[in-house]
Image 1 (cartoon, rainbow, N blue to C red):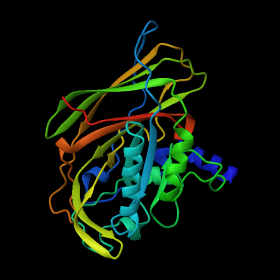
Image 2 (image 1 turned 180 degrees about the vertical axis):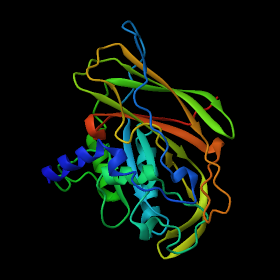
Image 3 (image 1 turned 120 degrees about the vertical axis):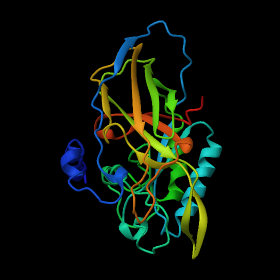
Image 4 (image 1 turned 45 degrees about the vertical axis):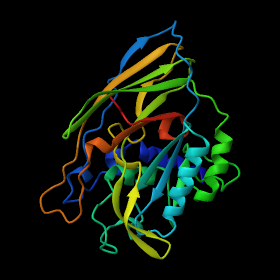
Length: 303
């Protein structure tokens, strides 16, 4: 298993070869867009009195519309988010397997919620088999299967309880610069209140809330199911953009992201457009390879 993970981390470092060899047609936001590579504005804030943020925990819920137990997983994620208020960063990822996520499988959906980014993350976490599955902080937990990053939804709470006492060496803050029907522009600042002697990587997710579409719930189809915190786009590299190889106390990393809002294409079978007013942003810092989340945060980017 260790050999498998090491081999995969090598592939994860080469996203253009491993995950983006093919493009799907008919949906412009499924095409691979340029990823950022560094470009952080770096400064020092040695005398900052900023309050240290409690560590945020990332939960990536791998889900699909044609999955009878996925609504139960979404309910459990909502419950965990409510219990550990302000500590959970939930993300719903529609990727694979095709029989769960391809809208043509049952030909009911109005939207195609998949993307090349979501498929790359699915591969990074090495999800396999039946949905729903989830990754908590992209960490391997001793209480679950050795060497496995993902687990069924009934195990998420135990994983969160193990992580809730962890601390973070940094704060993540957001600032909305501009939101229009065509674009979203925001700034993310990562401030380190502790030194770190290993590389740190920042990953950013653009999410959409309140997408209404068909969802299989048990044996019944719900026509107006509300999909929340759906992954739409990753403007950084999938395994994150490196902040620095070693980080000193007081280091500040700032970057502005400008994201075009997908409009869909004429004649598409399934809608791929986003609603700018329903977009939010999640960001998290990891170790090398995009695994084990150091800290995670989210923002609805209000004025």
